Each structure stands twice: as structure tokens, then as C-alpha cells.
Amino acid sequence: MSKLHVISTGRNAGKYITFCIDSVKRQTLQPDSHTVIDDMSDDDTVEHLNWIQMNNNLPYLNIIHNTERKYRLKNIYDHAIDKDPEDIICIVDSDDWLARKDALKKVKETYDSDSKLEYVYTNYRRSHETTKGHGQAPPSNDWDPYKDDWISSHMSTFKVKALKNIPIANFFDWNGNWFRMATDFAYVLPMKYGFKKRDGDYSAMKYIDEVMYVYHFFNNPGKPRSGPEGEKLSSDAWQNSEFIRHRGYIEE
Image (tube, rainbow, N blue to C red):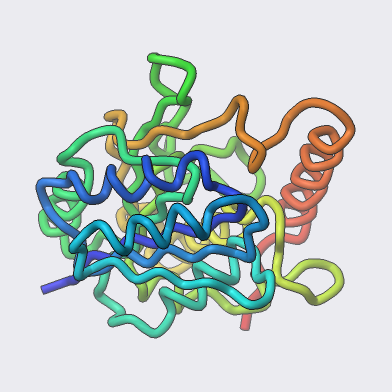
């Protein structure tokens, strides 16, 4: 039986980390583990995490305090890659949270309904909105994840074997470093491309068109989108995503 693990990584999520952990705590299906990685925050994230750990009996909760910045992609990889290939990884960023109490149950039931599935994703809403996000299923088997529209969405979940099957060079940028921006592109695009390359279709993927995830956006220092810093972050993210698209899939 596949185990289900939640991974939450982030930096300076002090205002939101409690929402994240509480949303997992309220799930009707508890995860086998919830790993929360603090990537060297310099706000009050550590204090919030210490309080949560002292005042809650959550045997599945594992809090990691990095002693060097690893950024999102490397954190996800390090804490997923050694788990059983059939285990399920659910990504819930430290400044986001699950929208429904049955979100993990719904994801687990979807995987259990079809042994071919290796990547399941849901719809979401932004924290300041009530409408759905823009997630969608692959339009056809002719869809190319590198050339066509981005169709993935939060919550992003995958089986460990899908991550293991990605040649590791796909995770490195033009300088040979782990991608720090556009990290969804860095692992989701080669994962989907690998499904089509292996199976000839996208039957290993399933989209749940229900809001299971809240993506916190405005008034969030972890995702600034205004002023010089926000403009630079947006520019850097775009540069990374375009590089990944143009480079395409890297074989072994």
C-alpha cells in the first residue's frame, strides 16, 4: 500500500506556516509524514514552528531547519527521492494551505483507483479570490509540455518513481546549479514529457477539477510582485521558465 507524504518548503513564511500545518492537521486522511523544511528564514518562522511543535501532538510532523539555503526544488528532491517508489508526494508550500479537509483523501483515492497513475494534480484558488484557478487536463496526446501551454496546477502530487525517472540534469540551470526559480517547470515538464515518451500518451496523469489548494499571493513577502524586488523576481522566474522550455528534455 502506497504511503502518502506531504512536503512543505519555504523561507520567511512566519505569517502563514500555521495555516499550512493546520490545514494538514485537519485532514480526514492524515499523511504518513509531513515534512516542513525551513530554508534559513530570518523572520519569525522558527518561533512559529517551535510553538507548533511544543503545543501539538503530531507524530507525523517532521520539522527541518536548513543550515544552508537549498531553495525549493532541491528541498523537494532531497526529501522525496529516497522514499519508496510507489509512495505519493504532495507538495504544499509553507505559505499555502489545503482548501478542503478531504483533499488528501481525494488524492489518495484517485491514485488507488488506477495503478497507472503517477502524477495527480488539482485545481486551486488564490487566497484573495473565490473563483477557481486555471488548471486543466492535457488537451490531447499531441500536447507537448515544453512547447504548448502550461496546464499544471496546485496541488501538485506525484509518485516517487516519477521523480526517480527524471534524468537529474533536467534540474540544473545554465551554470550547473539547481534551479532556484520556476521550479515547477523544472520537475513537472520533464516528468510529463517522460510519461509521453514512455507510454505514448498521458494516461499516467490525472487532473481533479476541484479546488483543493489555496495559493497565497498578495501581501506575501515570499511572493513579492511589485516594486524593484518583485519585478526582478518575476523577471528571473520568466528567464528560468523560458530557458527550461527552450532547452527541452535532457536524456540520461
